Length: 43
Figure 1 (cartoon, rainbow, N blue to C red):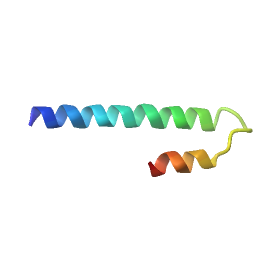
Figure 2 (spheres, one colour):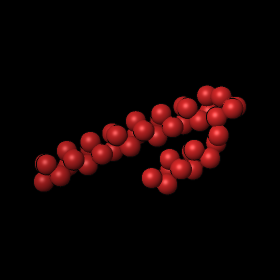
Figure 3 (tube, rainbow, N blue to C red):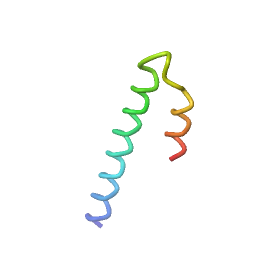
């Protein structure tokens, strides 16, 4: 049970890091295409 929980925590951690990076990059400039946000959510 502990191994499953650690794996879930690691997956959640990486999901938060990747979504934070996508959000930061998407809204950092008006020239960045905002459809990237939709592609990031889809994955």
